[in-house]
Image (cartoon, rainbow, N blue to C red; front, side, top):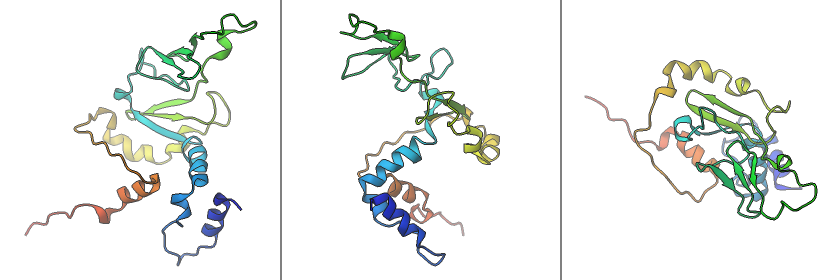
Length: 188
């Protein structure tokens, strides 16, 4: 039995009286992390960042499988370079290969949505694939809660960067756990 199946089994055995902490396997298993990367992050919509920080080109957000702030993207292994629209710019050594068509070697275009000043991407299925989950369903009731605050009008006031040697769930749990915040001053 693999780690993912073992974790599923452990979670299925829980009752309402079981403490809410996940089993250690959820935090330590490379197999579980691989499953999460494929199904939690690539399998749904992921927030890629703020629109105003991702430098959209001509008002459009590129949805190719790899993009950068430069005017092209270069594969460090094959030295192929791509335009920001994902089309192949150059492929050193392939120009003399019979039947090599640059148009057949563009980056895969991925679905991208912009909502409330944030850019979201879906990395599992290409643009137009029927298996791409609905972005509106992904947002669910969040749209009605967030949009009245007009977050697209907000600007960052500060930036903090942390390098954390821990599983992503540890960081998420600590961030959302109100008991770890600073005490709120009281007035007398």
